[in-house]
Image (cartoon, rainbow, N blue to C red):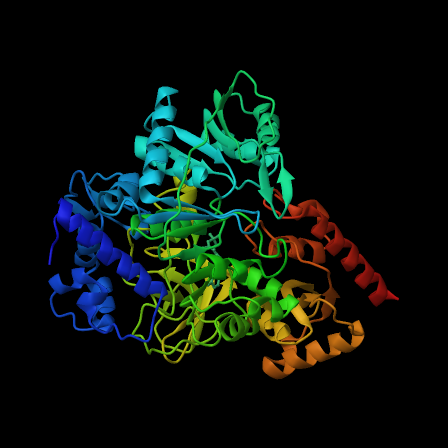
Length: 630
Ligand code: 6R9
């Protein structure tokens, strides 16, 4: 069943696509075994009788599969003539050649055409209870106005605009406005310092920046415009800075600055997709902005933090906004788990259908808490593995048959068109199950990265050179007896103790199962006898009062029992918090340098959330060493 991109079919396409997105992250009790209902394009593909057959075909005949998806779900102004021209051995990635489309038209105009009043964005503002809703019609209008404004000020096709804004509707409209007029956008997380911002502006060679007067996050005001002013001192290429007003406080404007006016918005009901990532990260790009909007969904823009004004913030928001799919990061789940169940139980979460996790391996305890407490044991938890470079989710427990099992802490099943393989240290493909190796992709797919801006050689060296003919993810994975994938962490995080290779995530998983532990990070360090030793950083839950020596003994015992004696930590350092990136990933690279006492080599700390955390870790490490010496 091919649907041309006419008016009626556009409606059909978008509503089907919406349903598919829903069935992807929402699996209700209703059976969706009928493949054509699940994915209407499949009706045109021969011999496809179920989801397994569809996935099989998406890999064995990936051209037909992706051509069907692309034709069916997107509006092309010029149809493509070649589905793909890729050669992984040379890092050559080309999809849909000859085709032209505008992603903002796909995210907005199609839906405005059929349901202009459908809610596109729900802005969960930092101030609790003051959410604002924007329809597709309003978002289109805002985007067009912004696009015209940018054009009037000389921004043209091929330019790169830097967006330094909190997660808010104007930031989404700015992204879409750039896409609409053919400009690239460079979204910089609004928590970055002036230096980090300046570096990214220079790298993108932007002459235009869009920002707001001030940001508000977790009740704290941040001076975004002032930070831009400071960055401008080392960004001579910037000719203009557009400034919108997030708060009422005026800021000093310079000759370079252009004030943006406000708009008016209304309230509507709708289905609600709640991905709480910041738009400055890939998860925000793919699952807050482009994915949901391209599918005509209602998407939440979360501006705040999980514990502001209290640790019930997420679940209060779920109740107020009637969120159906909640997509968050393990780091936040571990943080909230620390505060106890009462912050969750206070709120009505009956609208939730699916809980998603992304960014790091989700340890068993966090997975179970998310499932049992947040989801009341009735919502599937989908641990989704992917990377900036893959564009979207690649391995996840769903889609699969509605009743198919979900194993805690495992991403499990490759998505349509994704063909993962595991490699051994010799670069040979591991064909058996119950085995671990370097996770690579044997086939290209449309969402994958095509280059690194201004550095194509680095792209080839990083992703295609380590395993010729394959895309290398940098992660390690285990494939179970049943063929399910479990991500074991970055390969740099694998340590080798007396010849035994072990992923640090595996040890962390055991440590985190101790009821007193909120989270942990394990790194290797040079050990004169064993090659590498195991060093664990442990953060305790709130209000826990234990003797550190007793707890260390208990943790060592748990690791010895559940993994092996060799994996038991040589050092356990208790810390108040761990150094993390602003997207919540533990910076193990920094921890490794600290335990190697290589403070000169700490490297780029600009993505660090709170530099004070590193100082605390360094001091704690020195204390532990001197205690050990004495
Ligand atoms: C989307 C995103 C990518 C790296 C990736 C891996 C880790 C992401 C994971 C996961 C285990 C998961 N990662 N999801 N590890 N289980 N479900 O996070 O992109 O910021 O580029 O990070 O994050 O190590 O390679 P990005």
